[in-house]
Length: 106
Length: 113
Image (cartoon, rainbow over all chains, first blue to last red; front, side):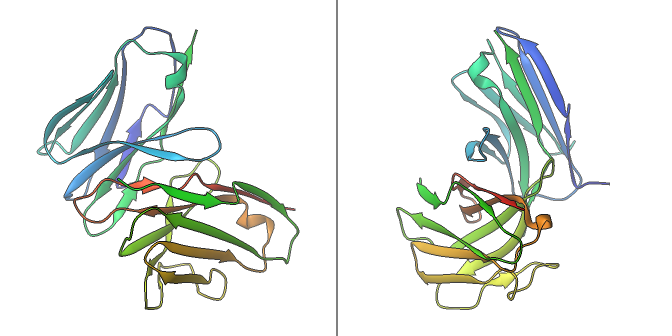
């Protein structure tokens, strides 16, 4: 079993839809990261969480430490949100999920 | 925050040759990390580069294949040596210690023919 599991693997939605990407992990962590990777490979950090909830623009990230689960939400999705979203957890090292490929149709 | 300039952004190489990837950070950082991302897979840590000491390699990666230099606190290189098609991947450098956000270079897409 992978230590970091993301779902869904792929998601296609219409512009304007509310998007939820889930991340479950099996190890103890000090922080969880949500990352965005665009075609070409570059990765941008969206959030770093250790508890609760964070919001930045149309993006919201939540984490439940007891359930070892985090969600990334995108409100009013737009085609420019199309990317791969990666969940990563850190304890003594960083473990990455395989990513969720999101495609927003105009 | 940290801005990382990584180059080249992509390259197509012949089997048996070597490619050196460079990362320049706009601030001094203690540790830099080198990752490989094979198609459809998650990021895998190759090694941690510390200034003034040998890099620390993860299981399955060796210095002869992936030599790393870290001449100062803002710069590092990763060389992919004696390449084979199995080395075709995206290679990324990263910084970010415990309790810090993660910052990545723009990635190097390597194709080996």
